[in-house]
Length: 256
Length: 256
DNA sequence: CGGTACCTTGAGGTTACTCAAATCCAGTGG
DNA sequence: CCACTGGATTTGAGTAACCTCAAGGTACCG
Image (tube, rainbow over all chains, first blue to last red; front, side, top):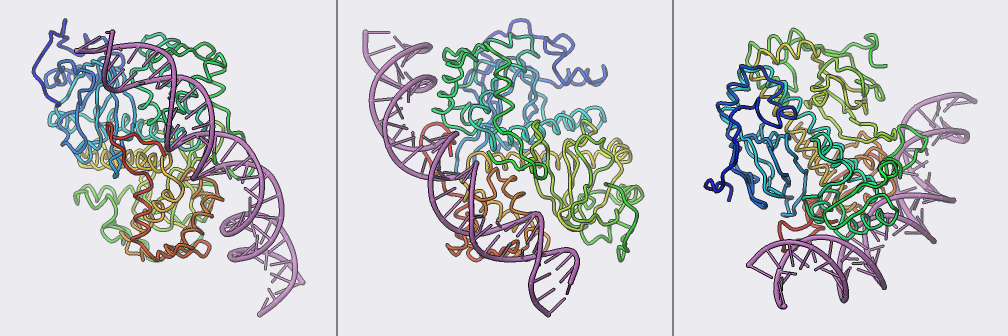
């Protein structure tokens, strides 16, 4: 399910990080030439994964740390009851699997939302490099603490904001991340289905759908299935902020 | 507000981690004798903080990594709108401030819920040790990835579960953590107020209060203000699990 | 061209929120 | 030691947001 024979030609397979089109987005950029050389030696540029292919499964021992090269990946976890909990979507340049560093086991799953390519650094080699490179340690510590911050942000979104705000924030987040990758931030295709979005935002499919429709009615966006066009970014950003207004006591209570 | 002159005698001030009553809970336990020696040299055992004192403020540059020695600490963040977001409660042996490692700035605040003591490792020294000790790096990576897992857990609790389940999970979590510290897991005092609990769980004060009352009516717990007694742990654990039952497709959708 | 999965829309129900008021409690001063 | 006071907590009533259930529409794949 995870492994499979090389099926297709991958066109111009880069052999060095320096030549990768994602270099400016990748953590490899932050490493010394020497360290990068070692990285180039151990790094495996995987054959494309097809939509639905798993990069790894929860509980599986961590065999590698993965960087997305193209496509998009959904990260999810299983609750005790076996419910899927979508924890994030990964775009090219983003790193997956760091949260398994401590346990040396993947706490969650990663599945391709579309045909995607990845770079994988075998866990063994990764640990060896970690031992030798303070710089790499720094970078990993940074990525990990960014992940904490991100999850915390999600916590705010999912737990305390109303549906409209959650959806607005989601759209803006996708837009911003795509912009960083030189893609049109005002029109993009959502590679995940409504179910995934709903799950990610802690809502139901119906609520997501209704909210998108409402936003379209209000002239904020245009939706045609998975294709989203941002019409009125400013109003959308307003939606993403307000909703809950201030009180006075203490740091203010949260509530919805 | 953070600093203040030594006001009280701290009784037997331990001078070495080995002698600390928390040693078995502290990450220092995992380090080599040699490393621990260095730790002992740089570590500052702070004067007690009074209830309401801040250990650090959000945005403040990270001056130290902190381990709780006694009492309890509330971690919180400020949303863009200035709302307080309670992100966790820290008990003796737990480490605060790792999420600032990357930015070298505290993303959030830490405030004492009661009179508390801490150990602080100056950030500078901490970094120096990090550079020299692969073991320490491992430990920090582990603590950080545990923090990711924890926040993710909270995400599930806050975003998707009903009020009763959230409260049940909260009580059990406190109980479990107190038990690790050799305190009675069936009767304890909540050092935070209802507002903090509500905020942490993404609920309102009234809902937390009502839920606790309902649990008392049902004979699961007994509540007298901040003092909680767990009467029927088994049923409480049931509450904490069920609530959302399975479906069939895919990994099952979340919803509430 | 049919089927299946995905998405949208509608109607009704439920949970948790809001607003409001009563009660409890700790700390203060008499 | 006890009354007093402000904040914390509990409780009640009504409401709004979101969920559930249900049906209809749409798009993609074979």
